[in-house]
Image: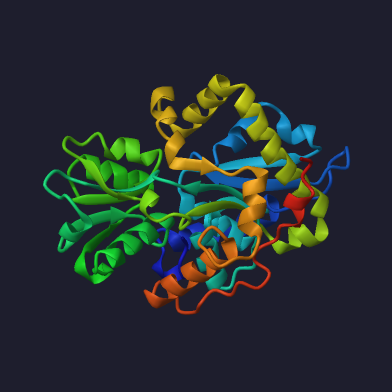
Length: 336
């Protein structure tokens, strides 16, 4: 989840300047010779987003008439900033991160659920720490203001603790996993595939995961409202491409896993262990999630819970507004 700019990682000022300078070049550009609008789509190392790499490798964007500049971000926070500043037209990010961007004034719209995290976000501890209740006074590596931080806050609250009871070591996900693996920190809160690196530390083990908080960490295709207004056919093509990609992966599982594992920087065998921890949503599950309801399975309800939580814990100064955030018109138009 992204937070107000002064609370981001130390390189935030430099990052914002770079992104602002590239926003004009990176955003939705003029039509090419064939009349196709060029757009930029961001994603990072998360099993629910790596299918975008398969779409590119197999030419599925072009099959839907898209001219996509697919940008991979080693640092997930940078992708959030890129969407906020206009350097991206669309990005893959979590519900919580989107809400926190909105709370800081960003205009964004969720048009697709990629997945729910059902175990691939983990709080991993060194030997001797057996539960979240043992974290009092411990040093925890985490990328502040991201979904990993959110999971930590949820787990601490469930155990009757708060962030004031622990010491945070603010690092990017990759650096956090490496720091924990080498013994710098007692605990790390990180998502797959970085969990694989963290668990190389002898005696390390997960003491809490996203499986304990059903529905709390959905991930999405998030777009700028301008893209919806000015190029709705592009948004529709992106959503259609996603479901065609899932269909392709189902029929070519080995080839797809090879592509996704390579992009994620892990072995094929390690990548296969992530299956249960990331629940990819079908079109029907998407439609069900976008349907208003009163349980965490419904995005409107989960978004309200998340907004209340992050505001109540002081992660943002203004409660995120939900008006216009959820848009299921493109899902409804996907061929069955």
